[in-house]
Image (cartoon, rainbow, N blue to C red; front, side, top):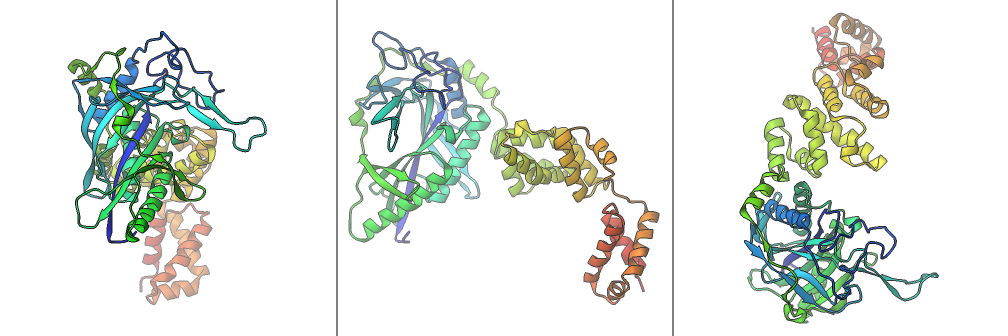
Length: 482
C-alpha cells in the first residue's frame, strides 16, 4: 500500500458461546454437520404465540468473556429487536442488544506493539440460520435454508478503530480468541463457524486524524482470511483514492479462491434496522454477587501465564507464546513442569514443541488427549537434565512411551537408553577412538578445534550413542594435552 495513506481498521467479532442449548429455547447447539432443520422448535423458528426465555448459562459465559477482556459490565443491559427481512431469519428480526449492551470499554494487548486495542462494546444476541445455495448440484435446485444455527447464542465484540495494519488485525483476533477460549466462554472453532469476523476498513491521508469512507468485509472465517482480505482491500482502496476516485460505503465479500473482495450491498446504518426494546424480555441485570462469583472462577489468562512461564521457568518469548496459544496445551506444560527446575522445564518445553505437537497434529488430537501423561513427559525431561539420558535417547523413549505407555524410568531402562557416565568406561572408548583416528587427534593437538567433532563421533559410534557427551568432550581434551 502507498505510504501516502494510513490504514484504519475496526473488527466486529461474533463468538458462539459454549452452551448446550440455544439462547432463548432448549434446542441443542450441536447443529454443525447435523441434518438440516433437526435442531429447531417453535421458538427459534419464530412461530406465532411463542415467548423467548433467556438461557442463564449464556449470560454467565458472556459476562465471563467481558470480564476477561477487561470490560466494564453494565448494571443492566436491554435486549432489542433488530428488524430486517432475510430468508434465514424467520421472525424478520434478530434479538440483539443496541443502546444498552452488556459491556463496554475493554481492551486487549497487541503482543510486541507496546499498546492495546480498545473494545468499544460487547453485546449478546442470537444467530441467524444459514442459506444453502445449490450451485452446480444435480440433486438440488435453488436456495435452501437450514435453521439449525438460528437462535444459537453469540456475543459480538466490537473494537474501536485502533488497528493500523492487516498484521495487527491478525494479532488482535488471535489474542482475542485465546482470551475467550481461556475464559471457557467459547471453543472458537472457526471451521465450525464458532468465531466469525466482519472487518471495517478505511484509508486516510498519512498524518491526519479523520476517518475515510469505510467498507465492511463480511463473514471472514479464519485468521488468514482476515489478514489476506484486509491486504487486498487496502490495496484496492489506495488505488481508488490515488486515481482521484471515491471509495463507496458498502458491504463486500471475500473470495478466497480469487483473492479479491467483491461488492455485496450498500452499507446499512443503524436507522435501517429500526431497533426497539424487545417487549418479551426483561433487562439483564449484572447482580454484584453473581458477577463476583463469575470473576472468581476466571482462570489465569494468557498474558499472565506467559509472564509466569518466563519468570518461573525462564522460558523465552517464543516458547511462552507457543505454549500459551492453547489453554489445554499450557495446562499440559504446567503439569509436566511441576516440581522441575528451570533447566528441566525448558527441556520439557522443547519436547512439547518438537515431539508432542508433531504427534498431536499427525493424529488429529487435542492437547488434552495426548497419549503421554504430562507427568511422564516431565520425568523424561528430568532424566535428560540429570545426564541419565541424551536428547537422542529422549526421542526414542518418547516414541516408546507414546505408543505403549509406561513410566519414563522403566522405559529408559528396558530399552537400554541410559547414558554411560562412568569415567573408566568412557575413557576406554576415548582411547580406542584416539588410536583409530590418529590424524584427527594430531590436528586437535595442533590447535584445530574443529577436529574434536570427528573424535566425539567416533566415541559415540563405539558406545552406540550411550557415552555422556559432556564426559566424552572433557576426556578427549584431557587426553591430547601436550
